[in-house]
Length: 91
Image (cartoon, rainbow, N blue to C red):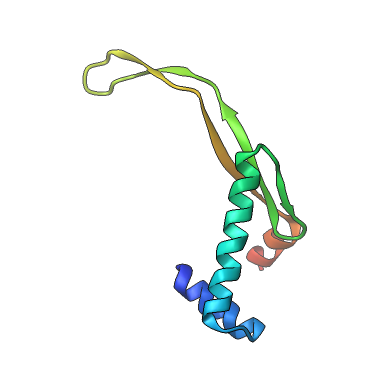
């Protein structure tokens, strides 16, 4: 499913116009992104949890030359599915 298909499904399920559904979805994604940027965890009970994890700097190898190279530390978003989502997908 892509974003336009999601917008159509949300509009149909909620009775909103497609434009209103798209604005609601965009606002949701923007809110989740801004919360993660500020270091906050986003918990959606029954769906899952969005969180930021810090990956430390490491040393890797260039596969062509074998030369060691430094891989910079970074922050990554992670998603852990909630119990209800896991159960719904398993059925």
